[in-house]
Image (cartoon, rainbow, N blue to C red):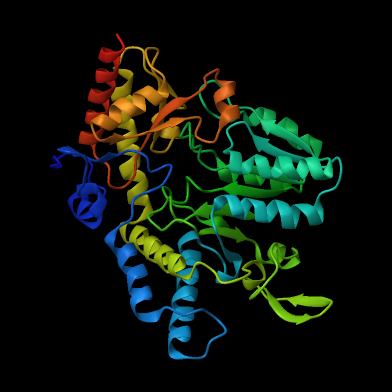
Length: 416
């Protein structure tokens, strides 16, 4: 597929395309791939693939406990990745960066460790109506166990959080406010700094689900003043199976271990143990070493592009996409205007179910998501069972938006 010239100049799109081998494949005979599903998982550049391949070819060994050359190389590469990720998000120290399997596990770590140690029957936790299931179900599980009270910041008709209602909910003296920085359905970029400031004013802690924001926006955890931030590698050019929990050092030091086993201990006796220092206290067992190395390469790639440039590119893409989608009779796009959202457009057609839309688009090589996107309560709020979702990243172009629009017109014709 040839990439045409257009007005977006945040970075060299031709060079980026050359870095992603999957973008040159045909998904059906003679049908090139147009990948518009990066909110679910992003594609991986050669640099990430090569970093993991190099590790397995030259330095594969377990970390921390070995003193031979391969173990020392493996440990150095693993800890170097942690340091680069910490710098990428502006953490005060790499000790505040915990490797987990994904955003979901990071949130579960907070609920099961901090939550069990600090929340009692009747305590209030504030969430929002736009949360991914990963930031709902762990709190629901803990609420059932500890008789907690869950309250929710409403979503307005235009896809924004009702901050007036949030201010009222804060009068309930919550212990935790946990919210998504960017909605995976609506694309809404929530005012995280303001939400955190308001929570801290009444003494509540905050957890930010950064699964969609950290890959797409400049995120500085110290500037946000966040207590916890969770995100995943696979949504930001890195491998699957590894994520991050950022936490303030003092909070993490006070929390009990989440999992027991090797590397999270300093000393073990038959009837007792002493947990390790941060960050290892929360990293039981052999970790995903190659994946951590790939994660480090992914943040290097994004840092070289510049997250301001990434945000600018996606803002131009989504602005154009919303304009084109609004041209199509009957299309309903959910969420706010472009200035309040990231590169996500979830929509419905009166003629066809979201699954039919996705299947027909796939025949033209266009990969979009269909369903409730792990946000069933939000879809219930808007009275719909499912949406089709196009999501954009650094490798997407305006021409691909045009192809998406052409595909939606084809869906309308088939169901007319």
